[in-house]
Length: 447
Image (cartoon, rainbow, N blue to C red; front, top):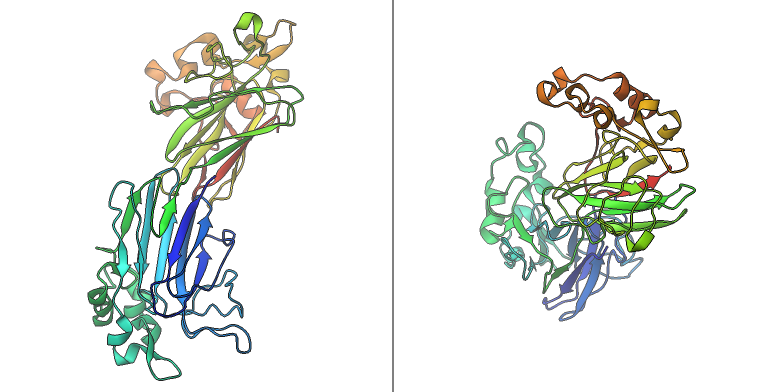
């Protein structure tokens, strides 16, 4: 998807060499370092979503390899290639949210100070205020924290953690919580100089900046999207995927489409989002009205337009979290089965394992659950709830909780066929799948 644009403008009277570092073990940006003359601007594109940091290096030269007096990333080149800035260095930290969600950004002096920096979003909603450290801290830096250049002038101001070590300054060891790591006289110095910047690790009372937006101007210009879901059809027949957004939210840009054998297509989800995906089979357009042999959504069109699947239908359910939190996803046979399906997160962190129902359950479906096509073949396998409509199968009435709705021989059949999929409403012991930090997803038909 389209990511964010960050524009760097150098209003210093000297040349600086910005550096970029992508977090979360993600690939680095197209540029990890560049030269920026006084008065010049340059921009870099961030993928969406993204989290990382920016800083400026000063006093750089190419004598015996490229190196800088402050913020050096020790790469020996203008590019930092995944290395961070050697402190002290003023940092800008940005986490771009998905699809107009809440972005986080700040200026940080936690790693000390070398150059005044500000970051300004424009437009959007929420706080959206500038985070800035405009003070020339080097001119007032306490003697114990000073970094001096070859000419004897102060070119940077260290953090107390860097200068002295010590758990009380670094918020480590016995001081590793906000309660046990209060401000020190040194962090208060940074806070007094730049109250809109983080002064030490647990300074967050006034240094967190948020904005919910599609557009940033000036230094940051972001248009971002949530998760991308890619559908791949490995079945030997054409399928017609459908999408349904839950919680009375607007439907996706695609609520149904055709997918030939071997083809892939994708749809973008906002963040947060919750909904389901399935596929239809045996579809035709007789007399101008589109309908399908399984999982028909009754819309009369390829698009489902907010209508769900007529069971039996294998479902993939996905809940996309806000702000890179924990997503939930699964394959479900609670509404029966029509096509083998799997869902795999791409990227993200945590468990992030594939949920799959790769078996063709139709071939083994008990006679009383079978859905047959016009040619007499079994094309779907119904849930016991759909067939018998009894509380003990549907987990309704007196059977509306896990304690009173144990597995039945029918749900156990689905469980044996596809142990990684939900087999009935209260089957969750082994079928819940989670992934954090904004994964994308691949849904495969006939994996």
